[in-house]
Length: 278
Image (cartoon, rainbow, N blue to C red):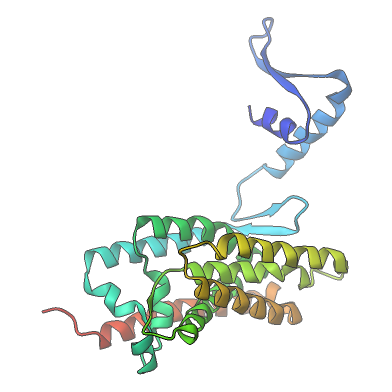
């Protein structure tokens, strides 16, 4: 069945058939498609020999880093914690008045809070893919920290646009930040080969179209989405000028530690400052 899907993706018609003589299942294809069908199946088996954290996307120049699952798990944990501790959401929500009074850690803590299960599922579902691709493109640590900082930038942009007191939460700014990083991914150097200008523009246009599709949906925090996307584009542009950071293990480890610090420290400040219930 897997092989029949492979052939269908290549426009090759195939019928799953049980051989009476041997009692085994096989695929029946037109004789003219036989060699092409074999080659497609060989390539499929070659690309799926073993499961890895980082796997290439064929013909796209992208790598998916499945360690983004850890970010999803952390987001689910914070959602559970905010449901079991009523004060938790008030302590971490992005509140324009409190941020203006000095509680700037809320720009980070708000990304770990969600309104309901649907809100969490939407951000985690899209974020798992986009963040995994951003981590694969820029390195696990650099991609994760870049998207996180872009999400904080989206929260800043939301507050700058607010003409009245504003309260917001959610990781959508971070998700759009990952998309912004991917939009300029084609600018990063991979070895000595440079992509042609047309391919670079195509990649950036695709990122912009995805942002319009995902980030400008009615009823969403468009300010956080736009700010996160623009921040991601800016950070991705900086990384494009410093391609050695993408392949440096030391830099990616430092970025991962920086991300961990920017998760733990803001929540420690929130816990220390917020008046806990007696």
